[in-house]
Amino acid sequence: MNRFPRVMGMRSGYDPVEVDALIGRIESTLGRGTHALEPVSADEVRGATFRAKRGGYQETAVDFALEAFVVALETQAKRPVRLAMAEPTGEMLREEWFETQAARVERVAFRPGRMGTGYNEDEIDAVLDRIVATLRGTTDYPMTAKEVREAKFSTVMFRSGYLIADVDSFLAGIADVLEQRA
Image 1 (cartoon, rainbow, N blue to C red):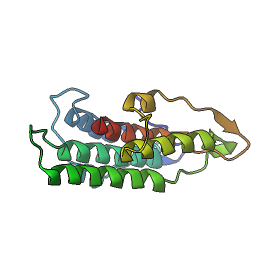
Image 2 (cartoon, rainbow, N blue to C red):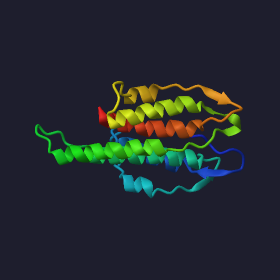
Image 3 (cartoon, one colour):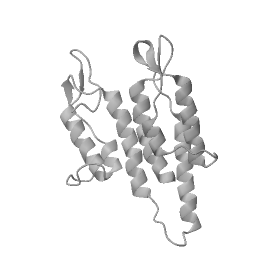
Image 4 (cartoon, rainbow, N blue to C red):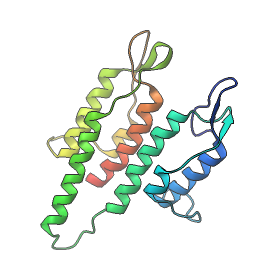
């Protein structure tokens, strides 16, 4: 299975077998894949290393995806327990966490697309603005995780655009965050 783009030519990238094994454990931990795999923590994902293999996965694509998975794993670990009478400090911490995620979205910087192609920057920026407003609870039209996952963007050629793999990986992680906001 090719989960990520591969390096070209004689270059080396991350060993696909090792990366796929870790992704399988992450998906299992998040309840998306087979539940027979050993759970993984956000710290384990942060510290993960992979052997280099000729024709392997592009490192930056894997790294961006792992960053998004770290957020998803931390979100799952910090998911508040809903009690009939929730303590104000619990809700305050939850809102602070969403604010840190909104600030993270505001700070994200995507690499430029290769060979003069990429996602239309204006469209991506508009979606990011909606996500920030949703995370902060300042919009009458909050963006859902489903909308983020199903979003389609036009691509540009011969002008600046965002690297498609970077945007897709980042938005996948943010969709997981938005599920917690609902």
